[in-house]
Image 1 (spheres, protein in one colour):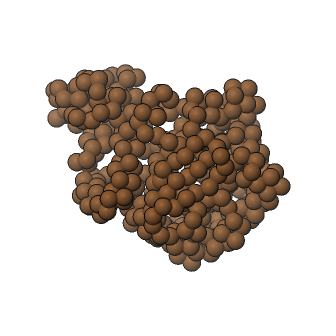
Image 2: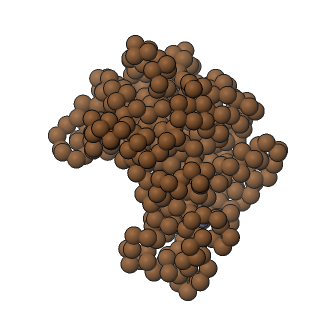
Length: 376
Ligand SMILES: [Zn+2]
């Protein structure tokens, strides 16, 4: 088994069906990757992921580097064994986390200086280090270190980030090729930056395509710019990416963001949204998001979502009991809500794939828009 993407249906900038072949099995796309930042999900147990329909997981290389460290991950049997997950894994480079901690980061053409989140002190997080750490952790797909501009609407910031992203991309592509390329058992995805600007996105995408990455991601979205601006970033990127390579929209999303991005040619997603929103008492349903803290659920004897086959709903624990438990900071309610929400999003991706096969995607898209456009 090697790494490749097969497109079964679709175009560069419209809805697509495909299969991503990896060393740890195949992934039907479009797909949603649950985020196990430190190698563990916040709630769902690893053995419940396959039954839920999960096919690929995401972890964060910077956080794993910080704790337990690359050598320890190797002693634990590598990233797949550590996560008790035998399917494919993608690791983020840690760049986005560094930029979200911008107050303690320094940035120049050499790389980032980031405060060590566990031991203190300063870490030099350079393109070489990001490459070496991911080579050591052993995911199926490694993401490039890139620069994510703090404000996607600031042209000066964005054009500087695109320049540095391309500089680092060339360095990391060279390292990948010197190490043996994709045949060494790890694929490498380039990341398109460019904020909300069409020319910047096109320039970045075309330069990356010339470097011939194994797949492509769209970064610098979902940083507070709003749904419409986020979709502009996607619209400005997907037409310039090769039709026969997978495209991954980083850090997205909500049900609305997922259907709208699939409509624009995205194959892969990741987001903490299902687990994080569950911790805050939000339940995802086909009628939109419900907020369990609302007083109307206090005496509601129904399970989270009646009829939902997920492990959390199947227990039958009533909404009112979970609401009380959330307020008392019990451990079980956040875990059960996270499990339900992840199940909902993974099932939504299955429904999206079925709808693309049978021609009903626009009807599903309209239903999700109706439920989530104002409520998400
Ligand atoms: Zn459920």
